[in-house]
Every structure is written in C-alpha cells, then in structure tokens.
Amino acid sequence: MTFPNDLQCFAIAILVFVVVGFMRGWRREAITLIFVMLGVLLIRPDTSRAVGEFLSRLPATFGYLTTGSSGTGDTGSAVVPDNGTAPWWSLILFAAVYGLGFYIGIRAFPKPSAPQERFIGIIPAVISGAFIINYLTTNYVPKDNITGQRTLTLPLPSADTNIWPIIIFIVVAALLVAFIATRIRKATKK
Image (spheres, rainbow, N blue to C red):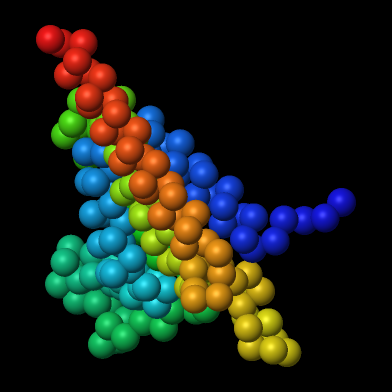
C-alpha cells in the first residue's frame, strides 16, 4: 500500500474546503476567510510561549491582588519550561479564531437559498483552505535533521507545475455555474 504524497493530500484537503464552501455559501465563507486571514497574520508558533508566560504568572498576580504582596520576593519573572507542548497554545488559539469566524458567519447570514450563492461560496472556501494548509505546514511541520527540509511540503503552485490551470478551472466553473443558475432563476420568475 502506498501512502498519498503531498500533492494528493493537498488536493483532498482543498476538496473538503470546496464541499464546505458549497454548503455554507459565499457570505458565510467570506466572513470565515476574514478570520482565517487574521489568524494567519496574528498568530505565530511563538505565541504559545507568550500564552505560557501569561498563564504561569497568573497565580502570582492573583496572589498579589488578593494579599497585596507577591509573598515569594520574586519580581515576577517566571520561567516557562519547554516541555514539548509549546505549539499547542497557538494551534488552539488559531482554531478558536477560525471557529469564531465560522460561528459568526452562521449567525450573521441565513442559510443560502440560491444555487449561485452556494457555487460562489467555493471561491472563498478554497482561498481560506489554502491559507490554513500553508499556515499549518510552514509553522508546525518539523524539519528533517539531515537535510533541513520540512518532512511535509506544501505543493503550492509554481511556474513549473500544472496546478494553476486546475485552480483557475475551479474558479471559472464556479462562476459559470453561478451565472447560469442566476439566469435560470430569473427566467422562472417571469
């Protein structure tokens, strides 16, 4: 049995985002895309260290607020042990930002009723899926000790690959189907 390569994993993940985008519609997915982009821009792997430092200082801060003294004579410099769980806080924070965008999209807009809304929803879903996959692979996939290369690479489109025509085909097909669905809907209303 052969395992899927990087390109096959990327294609499967993008297919999942295509299905989700079709189900949720373009309005909901546009809100989610905004939150994904915020998460990608603001949350870094070293965010985990900052969250760890914050959490390690909470008991001393709470003690100071309740008793008026730190009690240990420490000036508040806490050392956060690196026990191998460092990236988990930033992953949890990123998932929370994504989940918040997903939830706000559901609460802000009704379920899409027209087929063209669903088909156009594929476009922001594919974009946010590419951002999420790129964020996870560049920040959390370990590097090989010998070569220094990542053990899983993201096959983003470059000049020598044939992925660009596929992505352009998906976008054009989604827009074309949405346009045809709009025309059919207008014709049935008359």
